[in-house]
Image (cartoon, rainbow, N blue to C red):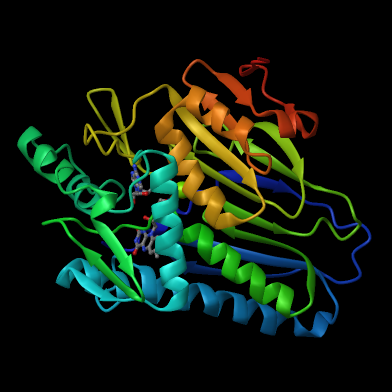
Length: 339
Ligand code: FAD
Ligand code: MG
């Protein structure tokens, strides 16, 4: 697949004022993981190390991409997809284990072996199209996370045609790796934004929380509908507006139902996860989107450290308990539903 820089949509907006900062913010942007990746450091023990810290953070993302990309022919994942089995480095093994854990928790609504179906639709690439029914049927038959076997440092795909695709989770892991590099370099305040996949390090330099805008899912021009105050969290959104095409008024977006083989059409237009680490936030954003509103809210209610913001096709907004006090609607066209 071609790197699609036009997809550098940032679904989350940050309102930043840096009163109290003892250093000028230092930023860098790179195109990695098929999207624009921004990192800004607002505070660190030795500000003269900021450039080195940014380089280390971007290197960790680049290194991970080379191991886990389905689009790089000699990545660990491409070898497994081509040969049916392959060796994983310890970090890659962790990501695949985590993906299988979320597949289990979501009863397969999230499935990391969905690669053949994702490639068939090609949503977000130049070849995006509506496949024939028989093609969808045969691609669906290849999706089965229970056929991905991890033993020692070896992964085996025990199903003909199954292909691993970590597009729903690995960007989150990249943000966690970048955060670790920044912490190791003494950074105390930073924002890592990988194509809208946001990881906050600490709070603002003045000690207050960051303010994050939640995007209007029907408006990719950057309108936000609500603001969340939070710090030291991952805030990750899965939405219908990130990668999609339309035919005869039907909106075909990139989160696919592993059972029907079509995009998930369940009334959810965007689902944002707020939690401590990005790999969890990214994996769950896709999983809970596919599970639907009620199951997503139940999941968040049962997990203390996971919060969710859901926007549906009726302009209704649903929130989990943990973030009610730090969330404020700003667009009168959307309605907060208190349950
Ligand atoms: P998310 O909701 O987090 O994920 C949706 C994506 O997950 C889909 O695009 C699909 O890939 C997959 N998916 C769909 N349905 C399901 C499901 N039910 N269960 C599990 N997974 C599902 N983009 C490019 O254009 N070119 C590249 O070269 C490229 N390289 C990448 C390399 C890596 C290592 C990673 C992690 C990403 C890369 N990407 C690339 C971007 C990737 O396609 C994005 O992750 C994608 O845009 C989805 O991210 P998201 O956060 O918007 O959506
Ligand atoms: Mg995701």
